[in-house]
Length: 290
Image (cartoon, rainbow, N blue to C red; front, side, top):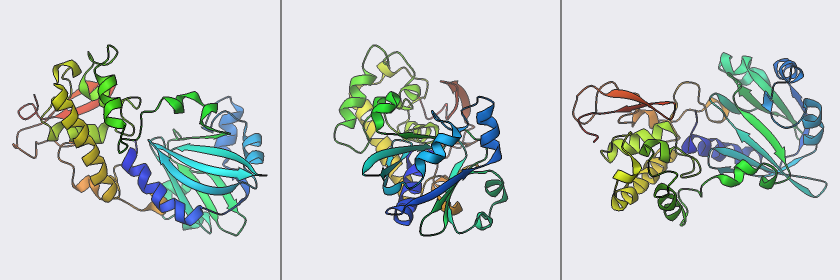
């Protein structure tokens, strides 16, 4: 699943191509129509297909920004602000093209589901192979309260204090540290890849109880998470499995990973192990991480 750096890469590619443009009309794939008719909330959440298509017509895209792992399209129509919130799920990708045929990878071309025709020509297409992504058209964040529960951006001045307060609270202190740092209410945008990397660099076992880590080490761990996230942003994110940035662009952070997906520790050369934490596979080195 794309994490903060990957979503940041999509936003940085998408914003200069789409900001200031107006959506003329939309269409969706038969797959979405059929799924929604069967009562499934496939990609389009909280609205019928008909309402979504109607409401999105003539929206002007004013700004595109990232919030945690979400893409926020700040829109305006008839002088009224709107917010389209896009989550890429596991395999979502955006393409800015003149025709669907320009999507070079067949698997993304085959699974194109949302087509936004722009008033000045061209298409903005959302493709999603596994259809776990989502779009919500809101007036503001307040219309979908879970958005308000996200932790501050990790690069903000208040993020460290927020992390420490929650990590040391009764709710979180008895949980494995990896579960805590992957919780978006504690740290925004840190998922399995970068939690694995940060814990490895800090020599901390992913299953260690949070309360068994000193405040000084918690601060160092937070700083390492921020460092790894920034390194990945600079590298264009990690292109693993079906993640792509806009128009199929790939990042290079996967070539810099030291523990995620590794069979052998890059530091000591011993075999790595894997355990389940919060339903996710956690790779670690039993010799280096305690």
